[in-house]
Length: 261
Image (cartoon, helix red, strand yellow):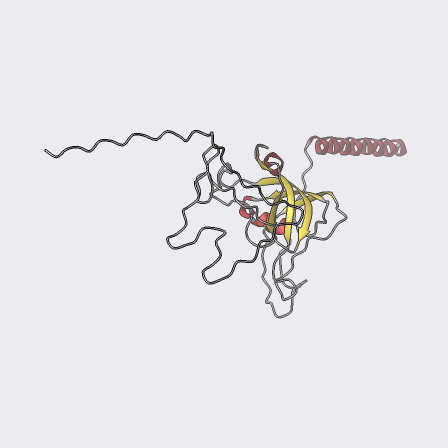
């Protein structure tokens, strides 16, 4: 009899333990899974020279330039070249581009709308910082999408259609790389400028020669003009004699003199 009681007690305890475990699993599955992120302190013990003292704390990232190589080109490489005797000028990149506001996707500029590509000196501070550094590593013929934070774009104030603190997205296609700047087209001459005449205006008369200047074709004084011998095949010009029956042109009668008073 005691043996059966002991077996029954063990069975009851096993069933109770199974029920408790099942309830615990059900309770844990109803709660969302959480992940604890442990941030490691940035110290100088790794990847820093020995002469730099350690700095204990959490590493923070203020902003970063990100990009996606949509198409890898096969042409020359875009690289940062420091000015030197061999390369006194920077590289000039010619690109097609389209820019959008990252917040709402509004397109604010595109070289395709202007009908011509855009050329700028790499690293010359002629464009935003995100462009000065964002094209390095591309090959001619490649296409890249740039994700530029506002700190590397137009800053806290913005400019024109760019609002303050606006992150930007650019699609850029690298067309060519050159060591020489592009030739500047000559500006059109405005109408009415000196040396030009307005369309349909009559030509200005030639200026009369200055006083004492012999007319064109007159040899200078003291020089003998070269003889002009007519070609042998050209007969001498015939002397034209007016016919005797030609009536002379009429002349106006002389006015009678006024007698003195």
